[in-house]
Figure 1 (cartoon, one colour):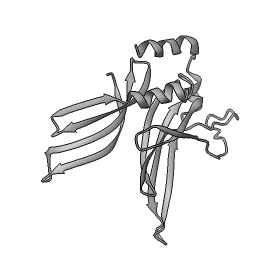
Figure 2 (figure 1 turned 45 degrees about the vertical axis):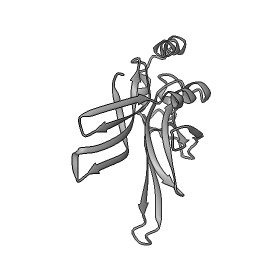
Figure 3 (figure 1 turned 60 degrees about the vertical axis):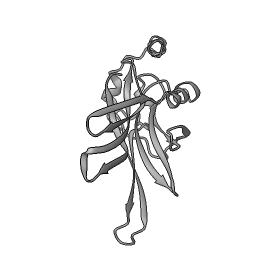
Length: 183
């Protein structure tokens, strides 16, 4: 496994308030074959033992069934009506930062539905073209400071137009690299 990134905590168990007697479960993405980001999970035990595993079934569904050929990266776990869900960022096209989006996923990370946000396109770089793509989801439950009622807030990142303009995309060549990295 190569680079690991954007960890999210699943569970933290600490015995007797001693981190040397703990178990921390984390989800993250990793740079498979130095080509694309895919999902994995790991457990850090007593701050001395690290075990990890790739989430091959989830990665397969995103790649092969949902045709998300680029990165599958950051995720945000949230509780809704007693059940855990994730918002998962994906890149539909390989190295196509105009194709970033979010999927609603079940508690295991399997996709349920790609979300389409109803927003005015963002004109980040002054080109007048606008952008409607988002990465790095964060879904949070807050409380209204006056009523105490729950408020769900979604924040996300959108890459800048200048960053997007620097990519030289050649899908046929790069998709072959991705296929080779999985062998």
